Length: 193
Figure 1 (tube, rainbow, N blue to C red):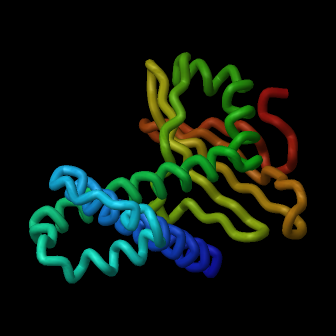
Figure 2: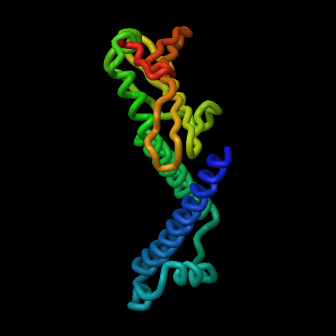
């Protein structure tokens, strides 16, 4: 739980800093564009930081309408949230426990027969309580589908110490009809042997 809170705080800080930078750049660009259209462009417009330009534009006589500011802010915020969501999904999909579980799924004939090929691996539901990653333990519920059926690939993994290799504890596929297919048993024996 502590890891989720720390990760959320770090993600929020990164998002806020990116959001502020985008707003500063947007305000500076709009002011520059307005001056180009009015023929008031000078060398001074290219000096100083975006923050300085943004602060100067707040008190100008030709301010941006409130509706336009709200629209541009909502577009920037939506884009930032989408980017953050995409980066979190990429981080999960590159993790070794995620990759090992998918290797077991792709090499298991019974699971491939039940789902059908080609397999589709979907994004994790980040709000699902089953998905949990700690410094030494990870549990994921990966949505998968094929032409015949769909379901979830449940993964449990652990490691002895931080920065060591992840070891799978259990991997099984649960189809939408409730059927469970073990792919990797807790004893370490693969169910295909």
